[in-house]
Length: 185
Image (cartoon, rainbow, N blue to C red; front, side):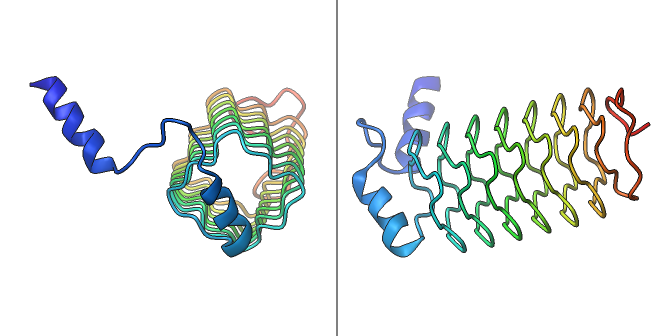
């Protein structure tokens, strides 16, 4: 009975490509900046202008996104787990519910981004600029936010257990002590 239920769930999810990323998905992103629910895992988008792209529910697992312009993009429920995106611009992007576990977003710009309910467990976001962003309900367990800018950030219901905050500028503008972990001291 359990295996029948599993098959039904798989069929309801839609077609799956045995070969992984479909070249037409990559082309669609390049041409239209739009590819909701596409499988784009392991692809290289370094320094590409994807401003305003709609990648809702897309799989960007382990993608290379360093210095990529994703400002104003829609990445709602996208899987960006273990993506490498240092210096990326995600200003004003909607990352509601996104999976950002173990993502390297060092020095990324997330000014006024919406990360409501995102999972940033063990993310590397040292030096990232989150000023004015919505991090309500975000899982930041074990995340590295050292030296980052959290000025004006909504951290309501965010989980900061073990988050490294040394040298970060806190929501109220004060700088966290170098040993700050889980809370700004």
